[in-house]
Every structure is written in C-alpha cells, then in structure tokens.
Length: 182
Image 1 (cartoon, helix red, strand yellow):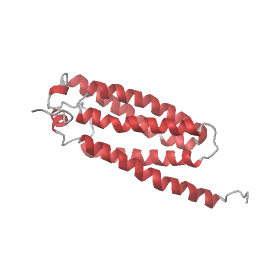
Image 2 (cartoon, rainbow, N blue to C red):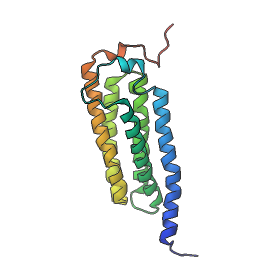
Image 3 (cartoon, rainbow, N blue to C red):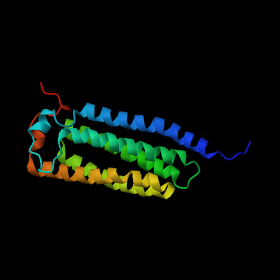
Image 4 (cartoon, one colour):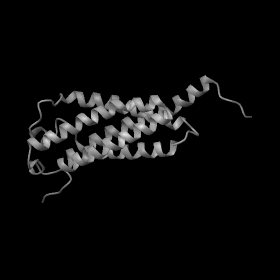
C-alpha cells in the first residue's frame, strides 16, 4: 500500500512528535535548573552584584518555559521531516546544543564558574545559530522558531559577561555546591 498521507494524517504525525519533544525538553530544562539551584534564591547568586538590565527572577522561568516549548516544536518539525536532506545533521546539532544548554546552569549556578559558563554560552550561541540555519533549510518555520532562543542567548551572554565583570573573584564568594569541604 503506497498511499500518500492526507494533510490530517500529516498533522497528526507532527502532533505525536510534538507531544513527546515538548514535554521532554521542558522537563530536562527544569531538571537542569533544579539540580543547579539556579536563579534567585541561590545564596551565591543572591550575593553577586547584578547588572542594571537584570530582569526579575520570575522572567527567567517564564522565558525559558516558552523557549523550551518553541525548541520542542521546532525539533518535532525536523523529526517529522523524514527523508529531508540534512535531517540527520540537524538532529545531531540540536542534540549537541541541548546538551550545552543543559550544562550551563550547573556550571554557572552550582560550580560558580562564571568565566567557563561565558565560554560555554558563547559556544552554545554559535551552535544554536548553525542549528537554526540547518533547521531552516529543512523547514523554514522550524528555523524561525529558534530565533527567540538565539536572541535570549545573546542577552544571557551579556548578563553572564556583566556578572563576571562586576564580580571579580566571585567563584570564591561562597563554597560551590560541587565541592565538599570537611
């Protein structure tokens, strides 16, 4: 039976992918943040001098939730694009950027490595830009869905840089949670 799928069947197949990718990516982001004790309420982070453009704490949770949803929807589009040229590379790039993304919070908030976190987020910014281009070659909308993520990463890079500039020696401000002291 070599029958072309109807538009309704195609939408349903995409929806099935999205019903997996969106919750998984949102959950992974949440778990990374929880493990790292990220954001306001973290003793070390609260003690740091913040840049004037630092948004309120609630804005980070709201922004990342929306960004993870957009990432999940974009990824579902690429997973759904079976047979598309460059799909395997696009999937691999997405997974690499997701791992880098999930590593940033523990590096910054738990290990207190501001400089290393800045290097990581700049690499992440580059990988996401390449991923967005790769996605756009397969599904234009999938690439566009990653643009808010790119913009937020650029802003987060600025915040990371400014926190490092305003807080020299911040790594030693409070003992990192990743080290045991006896």
